[in-house]
Image (cartoon, rainbow, N blue to C red; front, side):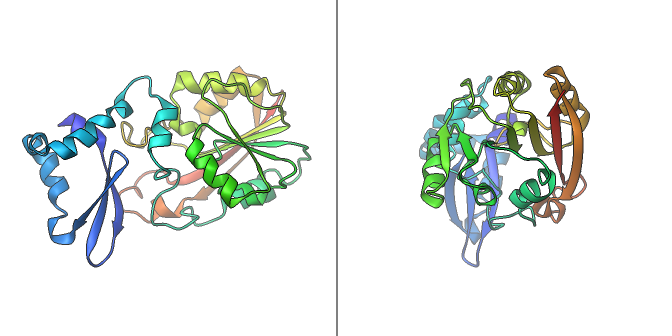
Length: 268
């Protein structure tokens, strides 16, 4: 039962005639009267074994539970479903995070090159000068869409263990929470090697959020990020918080911290 609870993820997509459930990144559409099938499967795992077609699809995605996780494989096969919460529009945050980063967090900092770490399909690109912007991601499918949406911008496919392009500023918006501690420490050390003077991290920072879910999350506190950044020679110079609308307005999450924290660090 614990395995089933980990590998099922339900998305809140519905209209008058059906619900769409996402199971391990695979979409299944059910009529409303039949939508309780997910709950039945969770309650009785014998039924899932009888449904060979569904079982085969689940088995193909079991690598999601592997440790260490194959990040590249996970995000490519996720098919852009979990880059942002579904069915909440372009900005489920209730605000444009790209504007917050460019016009508030970095407004007084001159730079020649800025790297959007984990840029996905380029949702935030338009908030930056295309001549100064580099978007990097390990998800080739996301980058294809980014290039289609923003042809004047520069995007690079970078693997989890690759070296990163030289730059003045790096920002990682809701990216680091999807990396385990060992992977994140390796990322931060290689980011320092880019000679960047500033690194901005934005995540919902709380230790109370659930883990072992899809997509995988490793929520950290501000203090934990401060320690990680201090270890590579960076100090916190600015912190701002904004309520994340999609979570703040959900009964499932509103008892938790649902603020998005923007942390700006400068090299010592």
